[in-house]
Image (cartoon, rainbow, N blue to C red; front, side, top):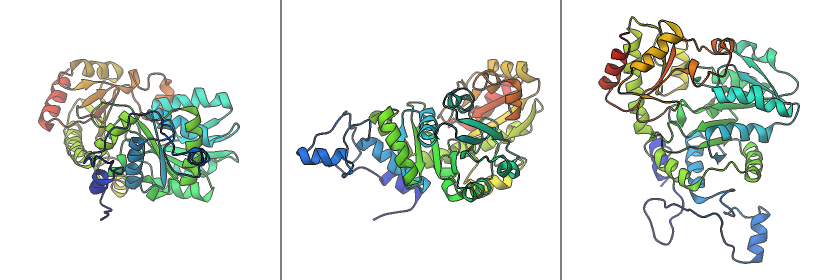
Length: 389
């Protein structure tokens, strides 16, 4: 009996049971696999058989994790990586050649920006940018050598929303690959493929794991594109470990119930901050004051776990606020059961110039909160006492 319901797919998508008839998928901590005979071995290496050869290529645990995400994202195929950034780099490296061009939203994760700025140019791959409010300019920025349009929604860390359907239509019109980083929303809240994305990338380290335990990344989408990514990755080695895949696959079983609570808590935190006199502005997709509220309601099931707000007083006030936190965690991670507070200007995006930060909405006083699963009153009380400077 099959089901299209998200929660059931997350729980019931499993590898075939072994002779031991285990109820929960076991760990397959093996580096390689044996063959029945010489012909079986030849056919397997010739890709005439779909089977495990070596865990750098595939493994039952990574396959189960990939299968779940593909179903959740309505994707044809996928490949799992050791981290979110290895997914970003390997995906681009597999699909781009020297001389190609990327058109990216200006508001992307700091390490992704660093890759565009300092790493890909080594291979003569260039990047130009559009701002979140410049969707109408995208077509004019497309060059003859543009191969990829890249974006995040919601953006990190300013929590802006991009019109995925509009960008998808442009990419399709010009036969350009559209890649969407869906880390903040997860497949439970948003499925970019339905809006025209060719590929979707996740840092599974974040909400997919949800408890700050392991690193992981994944790219899913068009099967022909994934084949290129697979062939590149099996030879360059950024594969996800079986143990981490096992953890992440189990984590997906509780993604929906966790996200429901994350989103409830985040909306309460955002509402509290919006009414605080030490706060200039609050950005959360499901606050009616968010400039893209109606777009967020169209694209997302709920607002997510991340709240951004600007403390009055700039960088000094932002740092003072962090130093006053008592219960919550100061960390660069997000998507954890524990609420995490980050000051992007002095940490995750510190390597960008001030101009680059401002172009992505990162002011000196901007604080990013990854709202966890603690009781909402306790989260709010810690924020309240930290804002008494």
